[in-house]
Image (cartoon, rainbow, N blue to C red; front, top):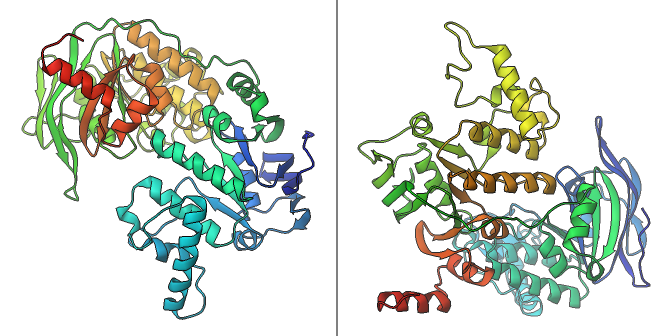
Length: 528
C-alpha cells in the first residue's frame, strides 16, 4: 500500500515489515512513513495487527522480514533497550510504574548514572523540571505514584520516555482511563510535543480522537495496511468503513424512552472490601421498565462493585436492594443463582474472567449459569444434542462467527465472545439486565449490532443498567445517566442534558453550574 507524503523529514519508515506467529500472519508487508514532528494515528479492529506492529517498532518483537528506518537509517531493533537508544519511547495502555516509588524514582529507574543514587536524583530533578515546563507536563516530583490520579500517572510515563531521549513516542490507547477534561489536556500536551519536534504514534479505537488529535492516519485490517489518509480530508464514516471493509452505521438510533413500573431499586447501599476500603457509599438508584440507566465515571469509582452487588456476587454491608417483593440486605444476602431466578441477567465487565471459561467449548460457555436448567438436563445426564442446538441457534441470532458450537471459547475473537455471552443472558428473558462494558475490546461491526440489540431490549420493556468507560457509549444509549465518584453518586442527568463537559466535571466530583442552577430552582419550588 503506497503512502503519499510531503518533503518533510521522515522520522520513522517501515519497509515490508512481516511477522507470523505460527499460522497467524499478524503483519503482512507493512509499509509506513511518518514525517517528523507530526501526530500519526494507527487504527484498526481487534486483531488487525496494530499492537504487533508497535511492539516490533519498540523492539519487543523482531520482524521476520523488512526494515525499520529511523531518520533515514536502517536500524536493527532487537530489544526495547535498542529502541530507546535510537530515540523511541512507548507509553503502554497499562502503566509500568512502581506504586510506592516517587515520581522522581520512577523516572530514573533503570536509567541511573552510576552506583550512587543521590547525583542521579539531583540531575534527574533538574532535567524533569525543564521537561515539565517545556511540554506542559507538570507533576509533583516527590509524590508517590499511588497518590496520583491516573491523568498525572500518564504524564509520568511520558516524562520517563522524554527523559530517556525519546524523539518518537508511541502511545497505546492513552485515553482509556481519563476524563474528557484530562483527555483534552493530554491532546494539548501532544501539540506541545509536536511543536518541539517530537513525533507521536497514537494507537486508539476512538475515531473522534483520531480526527481531533492527528495530522495523518493509517488504517490496518487483517494484518495489512489498507489505507493512509490526511486526517483533515477524511471522516468517521470513511475510517470505519476502511477498518471493517463495509459501511457501518455509527449513530445509535432510538426513540424517546417511555419508562413504566420500577423493577429494581437500591437504598443507601454501602460496601467495604476485604482491605477495608469503602467502595460504595450510600448508593440509591432506581431502574424502571423501558429505560436504560447509564453509570458514568472513571474506572474504579464503584461502578464494578455496584454491578456485583446487584448481580448477587457480593453482599452489601448495609442498605437494601429491592426487586419486586424481595428485599436483599446484609442479613438476607442473595446469590448469583437467586438473582437470575428473580429475573436479573448479568453481562459481566470482564468476559474472560467472569463471562466464559476459555478452555470450554462454545456450547458449554453458552449455558454457564444455567447449566442446571431442566432444558439442558435429563434425569441423570445432560442433553448434549439440545445444548448443541441451542448454542447453534444463539450463534445464528447473534451473528457469532465461526458458527461452531464445538470450537473452544478462547479461539473466538473478543467481539464474538461478547455476542455469545450477551445472547446467552438475553435469551433467558430477564426483566432487568445488568450490562458491563458491552463493547470493550469489540470491533466496530460488532458494536453496531450490540448497540442495536440493547435499544431493542429497552423497547421491549426491559430495565437496563449500563456501565461503560466509553462516554460516547453512555451518552448514545442511556435515557438517564448517573455519575459516580469515589463510591458515591455525584448526581444524575437526563440524556437531553448530558454532554462531555457536564459529565466530565461530574466525573471529577465537580457539579457544573448548569446543574447547580437547576438544583437551586428545584429546591426553591420552581418548575423546570
